[in-house]
Amino acid sequence: MKDRIKKFIPSPILNAYHSAWPALGDFLYRHPSGRIKVIGITGTNGKTSVAHLCSYLLENAGHKTASISSLRFKIGNKEWPNKLKMTMPGRMKLHLFLRKAVDAGCKYAVIEVTSEGVRQNRHKFIEFDTAVFTNLTPEHIESHGSFENYKSAKGTFFSMPHRASVINLDDANANYFLNFPANEKIGYSLNPQKIKNIRCLGLEAENVKLDSAGIKFVAGGQEFNLPIFGRFNVYNALAAIGVGVAQGIPMGKISSILASFPGVPGRVEIVIGEPFSVVVDYAHTPDALEKVYKTVSEQLSGKNPGRMICVLGAAGGGRDKWKRPELGRIAAEYCNEIILTDEDPYSENPSQILAEIESGITNSGLRTTKILDRREAIREALKKAKNGDNIVITGKGAEPLMMTAQGPIPWDDRDIVREEFSKLYF
Figure: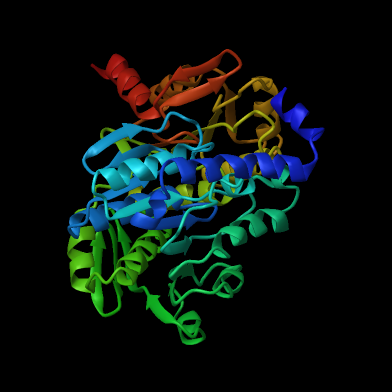
């Protein structure tokens, strides 16, 4: 209903409405962003991981830090789950959060900056010290109208005055973000040619090694060893290293801190290790899904991997319907067996969502099962698994809620896995 009403409201009026809230928040909470260093992270994938990496780095470098991610709110040692089903809080919540962080004595605030948040002016009246760009692949296309509009929303954030930019040079849109002014620019890459061709400080990951212990690489003459998985996490780590450099933290200190990084809940998280593995991840875009499947098959499976049993769905509520067949196509390429299930159906027909994913699975010999009840789907995957197999459950990660036609219900894929595994094997 709300979306239908918005269609009849002229854009200038809607923009003024969305701008009024952060303006009011900035005024009422006495411009808190002017009293704390705010680091904003934008991009399609990796925002949450980079936010957690940066927060961990700054905290362990001795700076009291606040952070907002799709998973949590954190001010110093106080932490609570993000149950807004909204990565970037709206209305006056961001400014209130920053005021609380300032009052708690925080020096830094790390926040994810989303295209939807920018489109609704939630970023306005915030002074950013550092802007980070991770990558850009199609998402929220139906909401923004086109990929260019989506990119432009990210660019709107980067166009805001900020002291330092940290940019993924290996992304096809890197130059677009490099062109926005900043006093200090840091580019990161796995490609030495990209580093040579830029006029700013470059961080190149060399001697990259991926194994069952994590990721290893050398950057800026310093060796890094992090207990997290996937080549994509090399990029996420480089982004955090870039932030550390921008804040004057020595490379040796950055390396020693990140070596104990505990990982991000629900991001390539191994929930069960024996007798088969169960990996839970948030991946909900085609690009992210493929990277997770590659990580499991190449880094976590060992020399003689068993089957890959994949549990996946797609969000409802009219969200990016175009990607549903793509998710099916990618799953068919990597998985030995697929179980399609609910993710966040909202008020959309769950069976229709699964049918649209299934339309991308053209391999007629691939066993595909549809089980709408996500708990039952996870249970079925656990029952099918044999020693050495890998179950990969994607779409929700550590999200604490599932959005249904009846409203939100408490949820956590990791808890469901542990509960059902215990019922079956103990």
